[in-house]
Structures are given as C-alpha cells and as structure tokens.
Amino acid sequence: MTRSIQQLFDLKGKTALVTGGSRGLGLQMAQALGEAGARIMLSSRKAEDLEEAAAELQAAGIDARWIAADCAREDDIRRLADQTLERLGDVDILVNNAGAAWGAPAEDHPVEAWDKVMNLNVRGYFILSQHLAKRSMIARRQGSIINLASIAGLGGNPPGMQTIAYNTSKGAVINFTRALAAEWGRYNIRVNAICPGFFPSKMTVGTLKALGEEKLAAHAPLGRLGDDEDLKGLCVLYASDAGKHITGQWLAVDGGTSIITGG
Image (cartoon, rainbow, N blue to C red):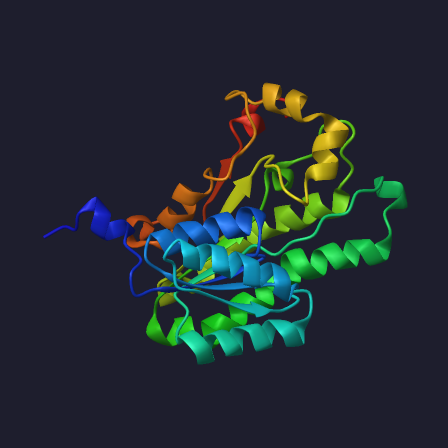
C-alpha cells in the first residue's frame, strides 16, 4: 500500500546536520527539517549565534543542538562530524550550507580570498560529505545530502556584481552534486542542490545595497526577493522519502530571475 503524502514528507526519527545553520538560509532549512520531525544539529563558527538559533528552534518544539566549527578547516570538519555522530547517532540528512563570498574585480581579486572561498564553499562540502558517508551513510545504504549552490553558479553576473570566486565555487558545487550522486547512488545516498537567488541576509546585504534591492526584485518575474519560507518546501522534499527518486539535480529558487536573459 502506498504511503500518504504526509507520511512521505515525515522526518520523524531522522537526524539532520546543517552547516551555516545559525542564521539566514541555513536556519530556515533547519527549521523546516525540524518542523517535519527531524532532530537537528546546527553548526557555524560562532557559539553565541548557535546558542541563540538553537533556543529559537527549541522554543518551536524542535529537538535542536549545536556544535561550533569552522568548515574551512579540515580538523574542525572531522570533529564536527565525529561529535555529531557521538551525540545524536547516525546522520540521515546533511545540509552543506556554510559559505563565503568576496567581491573584487577579477583582475584584482586576491588569491588568498579565492582560496578562502574555495576552501569553504567546495573543499569543505567534499570533506564533510566524504567523512559522514564513510562513517554513517554508506554502511546503512541511506542518506540525503543537500548542497547549497546559487544562481551565481549558473553563469555570469549583472553589472556591478564582481564575485568571480563565488560564482566559480557555486558552479563547482552543482557539478560536485551531479558527480557525487552518480557515484553514490549505488549506496542509496541521494545528492541534490538548491540554487537560491537573492535573499536578504548578512552575506548579501552589501550586494543588495549596491545593485538596488527594489531593482533586483522588479527584475524577477515574480517581482520579489526570497523570504524566510521559500527554501523550506524544497529542502524537505530533498530530505524526505517524498523525493526518494530525485538525485543529482539542482533547482533554482529565485522567483524566475535565472530564466531572464541577462538575469
């Protein structure tokens, strides 16, 4: 007998690790997974931000914990994975969301800034996915990995936005998602990506100010920027059995911005 839609989206008994989970898009996705029934482990660099975010989730009835870690550092990544497994048991859902951006003309972009962006946005995703797969997902033949890419990974930028390393890293995340999904499908590990458009956040405040928030919103076919609900549905779809036949895919959540020529 087939399951109901409520049963397919139900994440009760599942554990999710969300990096960059103390605010913005990461916290939004953590909240969505928790509302669907999952236990949540939040991670970011700052303990005080994590404590506040976990308290917010707990106040909403979500089982939420936190571990401070820098996902640009290999030793921190491995510690995060190991401590999550020790405290919560096997990880069923990994959301690779921690990220960094840097604005500079390509001809003047500092190499050290390029390395910083790549280390966090690409290398960190790989190391954490690899470690959790080897320690938890492969042997159990199950898992869902959700990688945060961006519509910036789909092409170039509008005039005034100079983020060559960020765009390159997010394009890499999209193909990392495809390659990993192809290789780990035999273990029943699904790997998918979300490509957000412009969402107000601490990371995007400078870009929104420089390019004009109202102008960016007006350019999108839906006429607005993303809000604090817009990633929730897709995140739970990817994480749950409602999406059990979806892997290696990316979807833009951008109000249609990426379908407009020059967008």
